[in-house]
Length: 326
DNA sequence: TCGATTTGACCTGA
DNA sequence: TCAGGTCAAATCGA
Image (cartoon, rainbow, N blue to C red; front, top):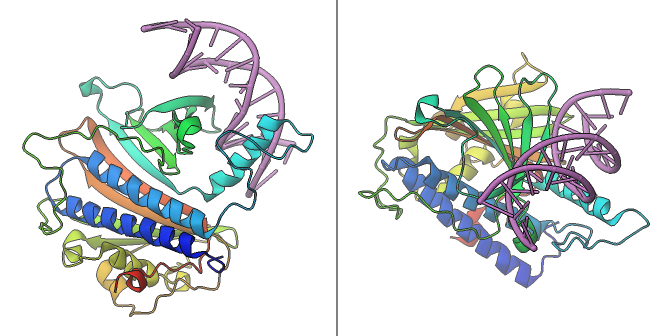
């Protein structure tokens, strides 16, 4: 796939990855500052995902040239709109996904699902088997204008009606400039040098998830103290170190077959040596799953858990930033 | 009038 | 075959 990349594509790819790395740096800084706004982090997260998304599209352009914002498609006697729908479905599989568990406090007067900074348009609602509450489907309002394919699903938790499980798919590429919550005394400007951990929330969890290991969802869950990131001026390299040391066979627990969820400390992950083992034997889809637990003290959002799912990426694609940034 | 929501039907993938 | 996801016509509301 990476073969045959034109110089222009290569340049664009490097630019996207560079942007992603910058955002990762900012996110890293935000995580270690007393920046209380989970929205800031979320915003940076989405920017990183957008960079990944665009980069992967560059690496893996859709086989059909029919995916376009105007809905044009090679008509083959099938209803045009449905044809577009199929392309969307195919594309959906390529979209990075992540899930947030958001608790809203009724004391704050919030009853409905929590709002984020983007404008969403509801396009469907479905009763889900075994779920008490229906699932709502939203897509970016600017889908047509900016060809932005970000979607989200909002599902109220069975057990706790105050908890919403929000699954985002695809990052916003619509160029929306969400109104960041500006704290008066806080400078949202990310300070790369200020990596002092000031919050009590000391754990950041990364997970790698591959859902195609013989059809089984395999997940590797990393947890490590944020302090260990403070000496990392290359957050991408940090991620690469962690991800690169991920070896499915190293973590698979024999106890479970359908879902393997493992937690290792960053030290453990680091101790696996410099073997970048993303070139594992599975050649199909690789799903990366990122889970970050954050706390928010001054927000109606009581709890927030974030899980990222990047499906269908070629596992042989190893992002080695050092090639681009010696 | 126009944009957002609702809802039944259709499509896809497991 | 069925559950989940999406579409689009109908409806609503500003």
